[in-house]
Image 1 (cartoon, rainbow, N blue to C red):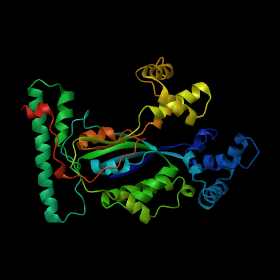
Image 2 (tube, one colour):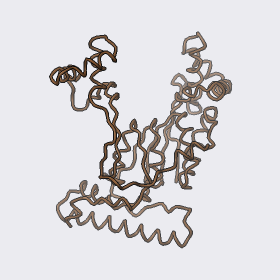
Image 3 (cartoon, one colour):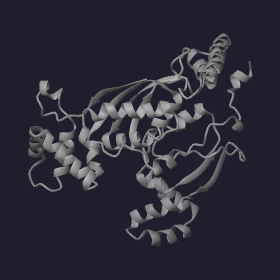
Image 4 (cartoon, rainbow, N blue to C red):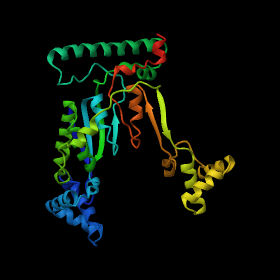
Length: 347
């Protein structure tokens, strides 16, 4: 495993040679003073640059004594994460307020490279390696068979990856602000896997070396341990179960309120009395000119749906990219069954 601090934001007013030794802490300190100091922010930044230790003391007071953790969000770090298992990447990618780009098993042909958990005794580790050899051997064989059947390389890789283990080695680029780094380090330090705890340690080591004043609460608490607990798998439903959801009245009544200037409670009654044609007109007016890749207005977030899903780890890898959803994965379990792509079944 390797975690490398690839970059971080610094004040662009610092001359080029001096910028190499700069820290994002001065930006955090300067922006924190905006709420209490009448001077222009350009002067606040200059003052922080000239007195870095004073800026650090200010950060510690504001973030950790006053509890204004948002100040730490102005410091942003870029991290290279190499030589970790796919399971460890899932642990890190569970934090929503960050950006991740991962080595894709859909686009990259993998070779026999994996992580063996250090918790395994030698005898079990030997057997574990044997299972991994078997899985990667199946992956390679399926890939070749799909190519021979006329499948193009991209589709062959995409389908063959279904038999890859979570122990497969991965790498990724991570961008995360200091507040979320602290949150991730604290929580991952309580993880049951030694690999994930080591990942947390190295992230903290890299980021705190540049901005020590922005990291204090890194010891896991009981709440962090509870947050990491996964529920047992439940296989007593189909692949998709919708157990609660909004109808169109949540968004529709808001759109009516926006159009008429009346309260949403009043417009909810109006919406209930409106016919299908009138309702369609309200939505049509709001979505006029909508293009394929446009983001819907935020009021669409008023409609909330809760699903219980049973899906493969390959499908979950795509689902987890949607960070502003609340994802509560259960423990991986063979009791849920397996997913085999149709093209593999045909062979």
